[in-house]
Image (cartoon, rainbow, N blue to C red; front, top):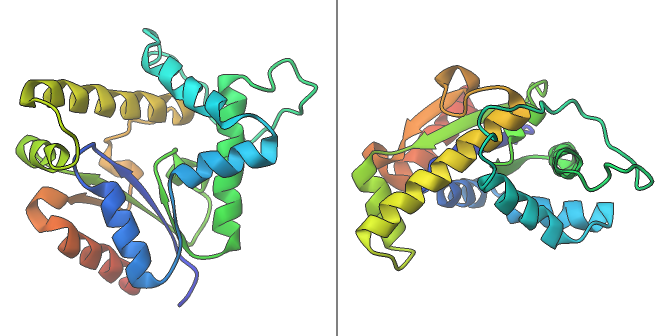
Length: 204
C-alpha cells in the first residue's frame, strides 16, 4: 500500500479514537494516540507528567480560548528558560508526530496532527462528530456517570479540544474547511465510518 497518514480529530463520544484504531488494524498500520506523549517524554527527557499537567492546566485557563500560540516548528534546547513551557511541550509532541509520519503509514489521533502535517501530500485529515444522543450513549457505555454529569463532561471535553486546537493552529476545530473528510459516526456507525475513510484513501 502506498504511504498514507490519516489524522483524526473527534468530538468526545463520537468514537473517533475507536474508529482510528479499527481503521489502523484493517489497513495493517500503527495507530498513535497517548504514544505521542510517551515518546515525546522519552526523547525530550521531560517527565511525561509535565505533558499531562500542561493539558490539565490549559483546561482551567480562562483566556485559553482567546489566545493563540501557533505552532511554527521551533524546538527549544534544554538550556533554554522556556524548555518546559507549554508551547515547547507541544513542539516536542509535534516533532514526534512528524517522526511517526516519516516512519511510514499510520493513523494519528488528535494533538493537532493535521496542522503539523499540513504540507504532507500523503496526509488525509478526518473530523469525526456525532449528534448529542449518540455521544451520550457511546460515552455512558464506557464511563460510569449520571446523564447530567456526562453532559457536562462532554461539553467541557469538546470545549477543551476546540480551545487546544485553536491555541496551537489559529484555526477553528470544527470548521469543515480544515479537513478532507467530516463524518457523522452517529449516522454511519463505527464500521461504516471506517469503510468510508478506507474508500476515500483508495480513491485518492
